[in-house]
Structure formats: C-alpha cells, structure tokens
Amino acid sequence: MAEIELYYAASVISRRQRAPLQRLTFVALVENREYAKRIEVRWRGEEGEWQTATAHYVAPYGDNLELWRAEVEVTLADERPLPGNVQFALVVNQQGRETWENNGGVNYTIEADAGVLVGPRHPVALLDFSPRLEPEQRVAPVTVAVHGRAAQVAIEWSTDGWQTKHRTACTLTRRYWDQLELSNARNPNQYAVGVWTARLRIREAFRVEYAIVADVDGRQHWENCGGRNFSARRDNFKVLILNLHCYQEDDQQAKLTTIAQAIREQNIDVICLQEVAEHWNDGAGDWASNTARIIHEQLPQPFYLCTDWSHRGFDRYREGVAILSRYPFMRTEARYVSASHDPYDIHARKVLMGQINVPGIGVINLFSAHLSWWSNGFAAQFDALRAWAERRATRHVVATLLCGDFNIKAGSEGYAHIVNSSDFEDQFLKVTDRAAFDAVFRRRQEHWQSALTHDGRIDFILLKRGDRLRPVAAQRLFVEGAYGRVSDHEGFLVTFEPV
Image (cartoon, rainbow, N blue to C red; front, side, top):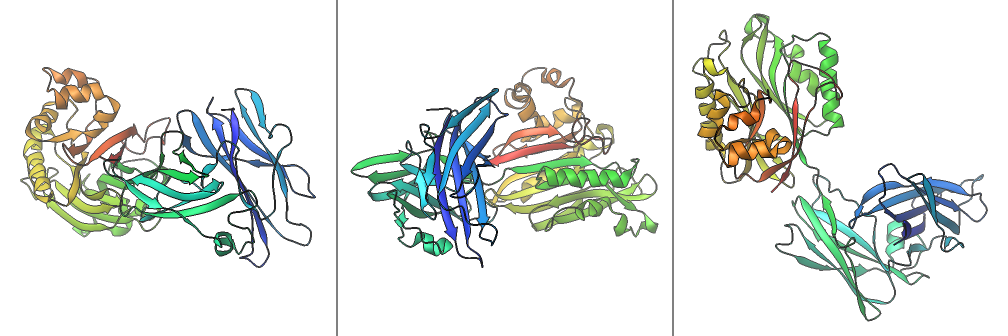
C-alpha cells in the first residue's frame, strides 16, 4: 500500500442541539516508518479557505500500519456557516519527508450530511474503533460501513483467544443517522455505503477479538485489521508497593503529593503501603495525620482505603500498613503474623488483607506486609502469612498477591526460604530478568543466589504459581529520572494481565 491512504471519512449534520452542527471525521491508514510522525488532513468547505485538522493515533493495524483519526466540529452561527460539501487530502510527515494522498491530484470530496465515504481500497471498514473497554462495560458495540449491495454482514468474535468463537449478525437500519443524530443522511447513501451495527455481549471478559465478514455483490469480504483481528481490552491491572518511611522524610507533605500524582498519572489500581504513620497521641492515634489518608484524599474518587497499625514507630507514631484500591473492598482483615502482639515491640508485625473484584479479571486477594528481618523472626512470620493467604484462596479467587517490605534481600537466606517453602514467586524479577527468574523459580538451579548478587531489593510482589495473572511490565517508580525520591524505598510498580 501507499505510505498513507484513506480508510474512511464521514460528514454528518447533527440536529440534536439548538443549532445544527456538522461533524467531519477522517480516518487514515499510515505506514509506520518512525514514532515521531505527524498526520494531518487538509480540508475546506464550500465557501471557506483551506484548513488543517491534526490526526491522532488510534491503534495498530496489521504488521506495520496504524489507524489515525482527525475530527472537526462546526456549529452553525450567524457569522459562520456550516462547511457543507467538503474537499480534503491526507498528509503524513515522517523521516523528514511530507507525503500526500489527494486522490490522484483531484482531492477527495464528501457531501454535506452524506454519512460515510469509504476509501477505494476498503469496501468494508470498521467505524469509530476504540481499543479500550471501560471497567463496567458488558457489551461491545460494533459499527461497520460496507460499500455495495450487501446481503449479509456479521462479526466473528472471541473472548478467550479463539478457543471458542461466536458469530453475531449485523443489522442495517434505514433510519440509522436519523436515530443517532437527527440527520438527513440516508442509509445506504449516495455512495452506495451502508452502515451496519452489532452488539457483542462480552459480559466481564478482559478482552474481545473480532473480524468482520460481509457478503457483498456475490463476494465474501473480510476486514480483520490487516490479518491481526481487531482487539479491544480493559486496562491492565497495576500494583504499586511502597514503604513510606514513617514521617522521616524532609518535605514530607510534598512527597506525599508526589506519590498521589504518580498514582493518578500511571493509572495505578492498587497501592500497598508500609510504614504508614500517624501521630501516637497517647496510643489513640491521629487520623488527620495518617499518611495513607493524606494520599487518599488527593486521588480521584471513588478510591478506597483500608489501614491498620502494628506498633509504635520512631517513638512518636502509630506505624502500620495500608491498601489503596480503585475497586471497593469485598472483605478486609488484619492480623499479627508475629509471635509478639505488643505495640511497644518493633517486631510486632501486623499484615492487612483486602479482597477486590477487578472487572475482566476477577477476585484478587491482596496482602500488604511489613515483616521483620531474618534474625528477628522473618521465617515464622512469612510462614504464618503464607498459611493465612492459602486459607483465603478459595475457589472463586483468581490470584493472591503478597506485597510489601519483607526486610530480606533478594538472594538472601530469607529469600531462599520463600523459594523453598512456598509456591509464591517474585513478579518484578519475572519481568525484568527472566533468565534469573527461571534459574531461581523454575529450574532451581544450583547456586541460583549468584544470579541475584546485584539485585538489592527487599520489597517484593509475590504471586502464587498457577494463579490466573501474569506480569507484563515492571519499573522502579520513585527514583531519579522518574518521580524522584519520596522515601528510603524506591517503590515498585508491576503491571498484570489475566492468563
């Protein structure tokens, strides 16, 4: 194909508002030759000058193409008529070169309120494609433009990687544009393009993949995103662990604000916090000074918080753990995993458990833990935590995550205790150093500790082997070059998707 070509364009006059509005949509297929590219549409109405509409990236298409879309809205006013019939051309700037697609030098034309015009190489086109499913979305609408006399249009789709598949017939509604926009566009229109629709009942699936099959003028046409199928999915599940350093930081309030900023910008779903502090206040605590609460108040709502404390920290604070979650808690529980329950004993360690239901994934049990050093009871505390977690891993739970500050270095005697005594595995390592992960957790290679000599982490996100999650990305979040230091711990972010 050419470096850029027309996928489809649309021109609709909506009369749903007090004043008529003409909406123009231009969708192009662009060959991906570099990341830093610019795609524009040069267009003009019946009485106007040439204008530029900037296109924005939508999704990949096939092996090396991308879908880009530009939209223009013009509302009728005394000093501004609607564009009416529109001429347009497509332009791509990449690798220091500008390339035009202007229909062989005569420009493309789409009439006012015409509906859809498909590109000459795309008699079947998917309209208004979005690769994202909303958290609570249970139905995926699909809108298809077909050029020619179509006898049948259908969607073949799957929510389980094509282990099973479904076929849903599309419907051609003659009053489609009238019902949608109070528009006068016909369906099919003067370009012999008809708009067909279907609704895929995906329920709680994490992703849906689909292709379009249309019988047109006696021939079968497939539109399957250049051989890769169209795919829409929910956002991945992101988990952050961070020890807050119990009010020992300079510029503490500014750093708590930075943490909230990172949670918002990175779209993090769950945050497991340790050394959450509030003023001791003769043992009664001071909720207004609670660092998890301060972070929580700066997050978009609804965001949910549960927290509990273990012992007196730094002689001034009630010190504990917390979980922040984008999803409501189905259950919370806190208990000591240490032999000591004495709030004046620094080795009295309480762990917090929260259970959530993540759309498209299922029920997940999360444990926010801050355990003692190896020489001060780590092994017994971890064993108590593991046993508790395994009791709570009932049939409807898809994954169990042990998260937090374990106070044992990767590769140490304490780390070896996790490896040898449980089915829980280090998810940050699995993403960032798969060779080391396999040596430790799969092959149990002799002298595997040497693979972790330079690791240095004491904070871990552990997932039980066989659970229905897999890590796909990981990063150290609060380091120079990212959000900067906010604690004496770096903060580890791991991104998951369902298996």
